Length: 396
Image 1: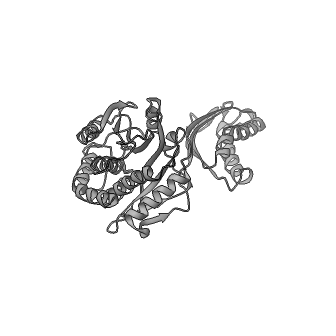
Image 2 (image 1 turned 45 degrees about the horizontal axis):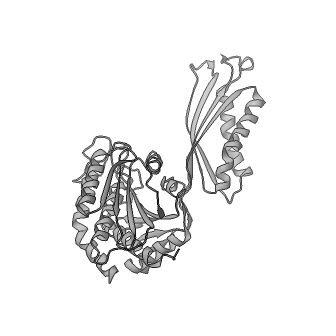
Image 3 (image 1 turned 60 degrees about the horizontal axis):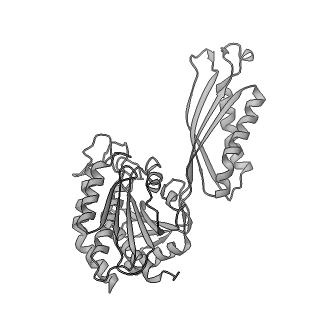
């Protein structure tokens, strides 16, 4: 009966949730600037009777739905709220009103799903026995918001955490489930090559930082294929190079910046030393000096087996077996949901938003659009998973 009630409540809320999502889409805010979004979220949560805290993790919101039983464990549900510095080109009637800012990653959908889940669970005839804590997080796009939220204590007492992210290659009405690694660890890399300047006509009198930088890049890419375990892949991309002052002057310094992605924890741990070793050998060979600045980003999202099974079963019961897509490959994109997983087990599922009537532009594209029926798919899946969590939770 509870699943029936969840579906009925979600269906009744559908027009309101689409309206909410369109409001967020028209009024996107960049990472760390989600002030109006947060105020709107807090107002909706308060109207549902949740205990609300604002300015958590700088511009985040926490809404807590207290349980009615004696269960003191807390289930957290996390959604993110920030938009991207992209100029929208969808032509929608509710297009972004903020110049150069767009919800091109579906966080407007995520926020609507989180609010819809809170609305549904707060209206159940039989309240849940334990507490559900809704985390509306800022600044996911810059991989900072989860760290801010955790620093403000949002994971205190949390026994498990669930989350959702839209996926345009999965049709609307379906969800994607994956055990194990869902996303990659993402780190930032800066390499500075320091040579000796000289005349472009006399390279033997100088140490050419540009040429050595090219050798470093080639060596790193070759070494990935030949010295790292191919079953534990890594991707290293140099996306920015600056150096040199004139066409006929040999450059004495080159700065390279890039990103490093990996899935396996052992590979992730090894990468800084491995990269520096290759840079050192190349620079030593040609008489250059170097600096390697390696900054750890967010770790890989590793979905918990029990909670992933719970999500899959909840989606199957609520949506039917045909609505489940088993994802066979992880993404090398990053997600700071992984920061919460350092505090409690959790799982994230993919919410299909692909439309049949339009090209399915990828995430972060200025023409990205979604099937809005996915909002209810996400609400029903999360609400039923929360209900099942308390019904199937092992005794302490």
